[in-house]
Image (tube, rainbow, N blue to C red; front, side):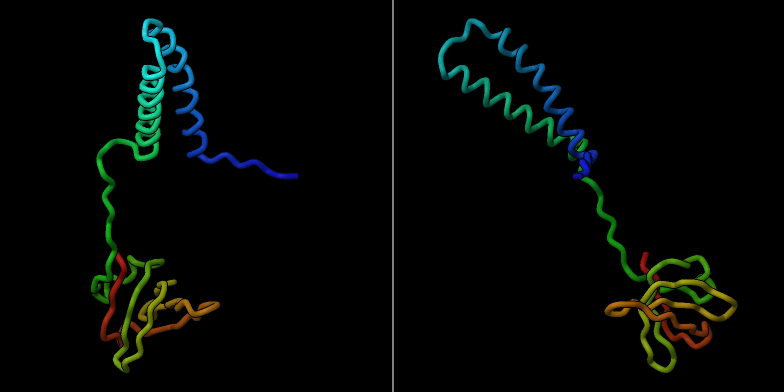
Length: 138
């Protein structure tokens, strides 16, 4: 048995089509004096353009463009790292080891970092006092 799934986009599209289906009858009754294929083609073209505009407005919303916030790695003091549990971090130890992953927890002076590997992940306990560089994705 198949399951039907209706998303918000399909519901909005159906609403737009239903709204303009009623306008089509009103347009046909308001222009009885116009005759010929040219008037009908012009009416269809304007109706299509109005439908495209309504779909664009419903999908995009207002004409104001959306702001895209670019995230970047910013240096963070070792004392503030407790605030960023769950965030992506990059760190480098005094011994030159580089680790990039998710900060899982902080217990005292120990950071627990989950490094994402090819088909899994590895969790490392790293001492805060042995870090030479610490950056958080913000």
